[in-house]
Image (cartoon, rainbow, N blue to C red; front, side, top):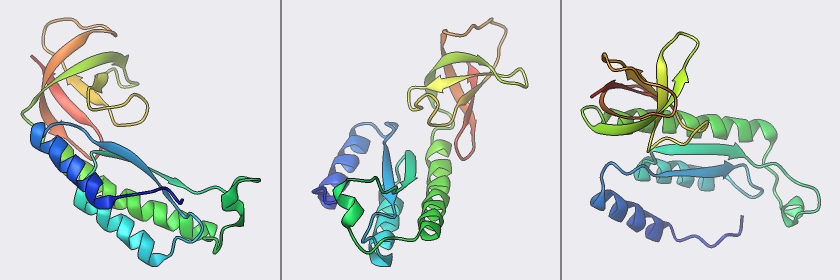
Length: 169
């Protein structure tokens, strides 16, 4: 997209953040299918994602907007190829997310209680989760009542691809 990028500097910054706080959450978004993105560029993006292991990653396909400079860029990436690339990146990220969340099992997190789901389970978001973007944290209750808006400390007991389960302590 003609944005200046220094991949090595990005890797250094992420490594530095994780050195200071291994439980920090690093998120980003990427666009696939920008005009001129060939197989080589796409594979480089996939390798970068595998190496850096973002905790949370959003993937969007490039949509051409009338009147923008990119409207004239060639070659165009076919829509079906954009969808295929998005699915491939999400498949890579799904495994990374699972691995990164499983590393949190046993840790103590602070969670903002949001309410109950349709099954009557309390849930909320930890500091590492963006509302309505990332997964959620299910709360395994003790005897103390909780209410939406409460901040509770939990011990992480379980993780899957995107969500956490924790026991209130």
